[in-house]
Image (cartoon, rainbow, N blue to C red; front, side, top):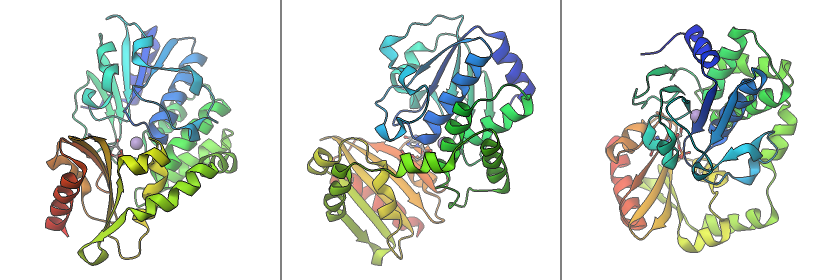
Length: 314
Ligand code: 5GP
Ligand code: MN
């Protein structure tokens, strides 16, 4: 059950050693929320340590503090540490960082599929991003702000709602974004950095598009990241999802990414269908219109299974 905003404030003030973590394959919301809370705790004089069990896409390099994010093996904790799990539904989503969770846990998240696993939680599926929740909390607490926090939180919110284009964008989302701009967030600076592509990544687009397929008269679109494609794109492929989403007539878009001969990573996006339910069939989760899962199947087989599950709901 959710604790109150005041209880979270008291909790963060109470602990001196705080581990901050977020989900694997971190997106703008995971990274932005992590950095913002870390900056805020620094301002409160706390020892806070950030951990993510994954490499971070270099498109986020412009965010202040990124260089202080550790890999799990670089950190040691004990049961006197509070762990704050951001933007993740369960401990299964933080990879090897789970081994560092030795004391109590606070979970701040906005996923509908949240597992309600933590001692303390603040789960708000009505918010477009975990960054939106943190902005609300920091504003409520009326404490310190700096530009680094504002930029990180604006990045978190904007990336999770497609720069205010997706249907999770509410009046509250926009009000929180406005508040961040008042605190010094730079929408132009952030967009310019996030939109900038290396020539290599841009050229890779033609290869990626060769692997775009349509099913069910174009109502389903799919991008396949085969080992051959991944060799050209590199591991960070998030920027290509919109090409599948934006195919005219496509109601559900998904990507299948090669992990091994027996493992495939799937990302789903929809314009209305509940893809959280599709992901849940395979043990994954997320939101109604954006979700993900991992299948212990080869890429082509995973693709067929996902198409079948989507077709049931079309
Ligand atoms: P993405 O497709 O960008 O990896 O993920 C879309 C959304 O679904 C994100 O909010 C992400 O946190 C969530 N998500 C992705 N994969 C999983 C998964 O395997 N399990 C759960 N619970 N959520 C996931
Ligand atoms: Mn999020």
